[in-house]
Length: 630
Image (cartoon, rainbow, N blue to C red; front, side, top):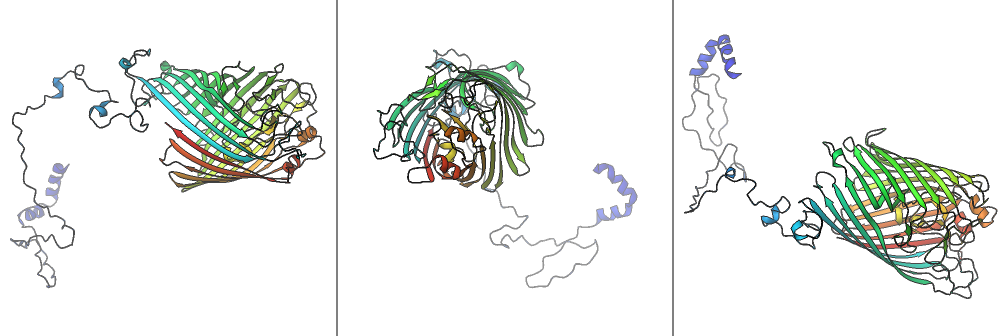
């Protein structure tokens, strides 16, 4: 381009080009110190000073003058007599050069030395490098793409608490105690050791494993001390404290990856069979458990579309630890779930999920007694007869954000039939609803939250329709989760049903079950309203403080009034106030300290049901938890 323009310029101004070619370049002389600067005469015929002044590099202290280049250091010459230049890489065949694999290359270079006790740096037992088949000939594996992952967790819980504790019918710890409710203080100490092992095949850094074998065992030791008899054991002759232990199988499955269905973006389809974890929605409102089943799952469209087709055969649970019991026959309770996730559906940045679930329960002829001697199926309510039921759940769940507002929402409609309404003794239709939403707003290191929940209650327990919503197995992360008093503690429904609770431990619904782990769903319940606010404060990357305040009401107290044979029970449960502090000294999940406290300020409805000895209206719960993970 530059050469082609020269002729055009020459043609336009030939005399000017010739004059500029012969003229000397203009120059400006340096004025002497103290002299005033004078204006240079105009024109192109001025001659430059043949001896310009040298550059002064000290004009600005600490800086070099622009345009000044310091002298280069002296040349350093090295001699290595007898050395031979290395051959070019092309001189070797790639099949014959012993090069460590990409996982062990840094160890071959002396950069990293493996330490089996160090879970942070490269570790074969954490799946950071493949297994050497020659070192484990007893394993039926071939190739260099098998990985082993070991997880070890210690979970320690200390929990002093107060809640309404009924006085035993036959006997009591205090002979002078004649009230319905006795002292309310109790203590729980629980220690759980979890060991998980996985064997994976495939380069998992780039795509899901093609084969996975996983086994997770949990061993729990728990100690409980309460002030009354017949709370921990059905026999009045047994004391008011208990030490128990149990070994449960929480995971034992095989996962096979259909590699032929992969696409260029590694969208996949897998099938998993065995005891496996599954969560039906974002917050665990409907079904969040580790159960025996078969699951077909995968994704499509660059992971924007995800799906699950799952069938579960529910296992019995240990009464005191809540762990899976594989030494007992599975329950006659089946769950079928199909859900579909779609990212950026309805609006961008919002993931929508449609869930269809079916719960088929045929335990009407069973009589199940828990490990402490209390009947759990059927529950000791109403006509005391067993129940069979079929329930279909239709749900929509959303998780994402709208602008700067984070949103999580769930809505379920339960339809079906209960073969025995324990109030009437005849079949009844099930028609119940549930909705919950949480909005949050992030500002720097603070997240502000607003929560709301609705659980429909049954307004007429003697009609042919049950309107109280109940889930299959809830374990919600909502409104403070297990920091909340109402979610953490179990409130016994004394005076209306023996060995029956208003709510379940680690559950938010008021369902009048005998047990969340071993009981049946109950759609004759008072329901719930909840409105709450909260905030999370990330003071440092290692330290977080959270606070929550919830107000709770019974949605409809008709069921409670009929079971307690009372005319009117107010709906106000009260205020649930809680706060927690979490400290992670290494800014990861390997060492976590947690301390939380919660109180329930009982409202008129709660005081009506649980008039405590001494007219106490406030109950508290403290949770101290230490988690160590490898």
